[in-house]
Picture 1: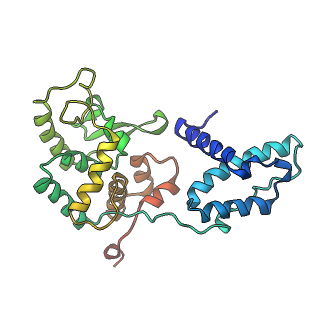
Picture 2 (picture 1 turned 180 degrees about the horizontal axis):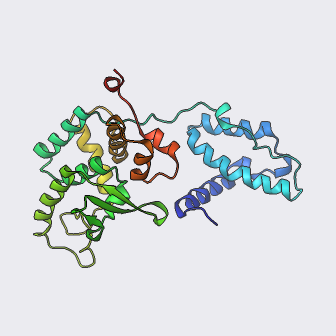
Length: 268
């Protein structure tokens, strides 16, 4: 009852996939631990990443635990550590160096007709998620106080400091925005497309990746890369990890640690 809607959808998708698999047709009393492990190895060999298989396990393990509690089976065959079975194949998170950030923004300004330049600056300067950026409203801006109010995951609110640079770009954006014909019902959204409707996540995803490639940045870039970059800059500047956690809206400090990177020049 306490899981979030996105998590519930992920679980539902996995349950359907399990039902469609021949393994999912077997009776629970006939599943041994070696069967469970062999199936996960098979899924991995077929191309599923360990993180995805972890979701399968997070669905199956408690289901079989309930079967144990109900005396339908004696032991839970899914009680084992997946990290001991499958390699860590998660793509390493990357962050743009200050030089790459400068190169990227210069390209957007000089060759991208300035489209979405302001959006990228805000992502780099605040560490917002794309969904948080596209849902940002005028009523969430407290520029005189130097803060944004963000409605994050689970409808939790947080305040994020906004830099002088980002405030400057917002003020420039508002000069253009004030001349736009805004669609009814979209008036309170901060960022709009050319048609006067609020931006969508897909627009940002496509634009960030394409223009990074055109700028000659070889790393695989996504809006989340900008979020990583924000966190890394803060850490390298001496920010406390828990302060970064609060700004990013992470429930766990462990998640924040994944997002932060120290480059070699900082170590030297």
